[in-house]
Amino acid sequence: MQNTDDSYQIRSERTRWFMESRFGMFIHWGLYSVPGRGEWVRNRENIPDEDYSPYFKEFDPVRYDPREWARTAKAAGIKYAVMTAKHHEGFCLFDSQYTDYKSTNTKAGKDLIAGFVEAFRAEGIRIGLYYSLIDWNHPDYPHYGDKTHPEREMEKNRDRKHDFPRYVEYLHNQVRELLTNYGKIDIMWFDFSYDVMTGEKWEADRLVKTARSLQPDIIIDDRLIANGLPGRVLEAEPLPYAGDFFSPEQIIPSEAVTDRLGRAVPWESCVTLNNHWGYGSKDLRYTGAENIVKMLVNTTSKNGNLLINIGPNAKGEFPEEVLPSLEKTGKWLKKNGESVFGCGKADFPKPEWGRYTQRGNKLYAHVYERGPAQLRFDGLMGKVKNARLLRDGSELDLVKWRVDYPDDAFVDLVFTDLPDETDTVIEFELTKGEQQ
Image 1 (cartoon, rainbow, N blue to C red):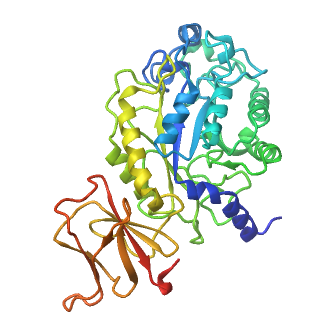
Image 2: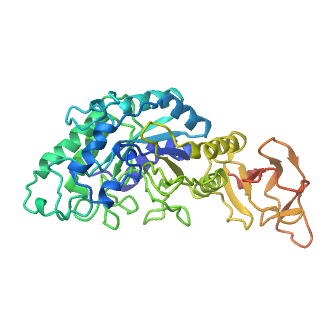
Image 3: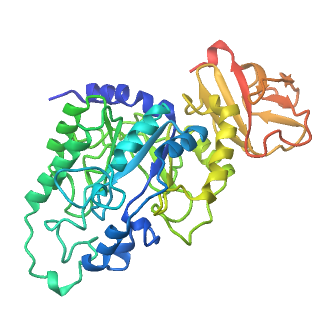
């Protein structure tokens, strides 16, 4: 059996690029974009198969241009993207030989994953594929009494028979397709486990071995094991299929994530920019760039990543309401990305006016509030050589000593307002003894 420390080191090496990338894009797209009431619409409204099937016939994304998607992501500063190859509804955006419930059999008439992979890879963005472990369309996935199935309460399903091992084989065959037919895949994002539907119910050990045999460098999320069960990635000795990173949803942890032994664990917060993962035709109030930037800085300051979600509409477009926020985020990163990409938790506590990130001998102060004319940096006296505005490289006056605060450094703020209303970044060069 592999030594725990060896496994930890292998995982650290495998996820190195991931933890330097910091900023990713989730893309939730499927038949649910047609009703436009979110990705769980079939579950929430208990829609039976016969009432959901018309969406398959109507799905016609005539404006789908993955190159435009990729250009938009690139301009926003995105480093990796994860797209739903199959969500819980069971509809496949790829040309699987194991089902007819796929995009090539709709009016789209094409493999939509192939276009995504090609376009995003061309822009230098790493590729991730999402695959739902559950499937509301497959006849062998449990219906009656299941926690999630839309037909879970329908009497017609009470005595329905399921060959669940046959479904598991279907799942494995489709994952094999995804990891064989599209070249190098960087991330496999499984979702999700619950109740008894967890771990070896999916034959998770075999599944992960298959994934790693086909894509030796692939990194895998932590959702093959249900929340709260032993053996997850946060354990001192996680199970072989525990995954490579922790994936909190719609929250950002209060501090850097560690395992039971106090060792750093790679992690990624996945968040929506409105209130749905899939397209919501009436949910068009998207969060602004200021919040995206601050979430990104927040996760980076705790050694984590941010995965922001986009739900394209039924025509195949990113909602136009989200585009200004993506554009503005990209402009901020173009000037300040050095304080995010390749950075992580600083060796200094969180300041009252914002956050710190750090890379080597560079300490980045993310200033959200201007305060008085001299900005105070607790405990930095004698630990920094110089200070500059990151956005343009201009020198700031570093007050290296004040008799009333001998342990603290100060920077004279020569501007009336902060140069960047979203996040003004000051770059400090640390003295040799303070480098990470």
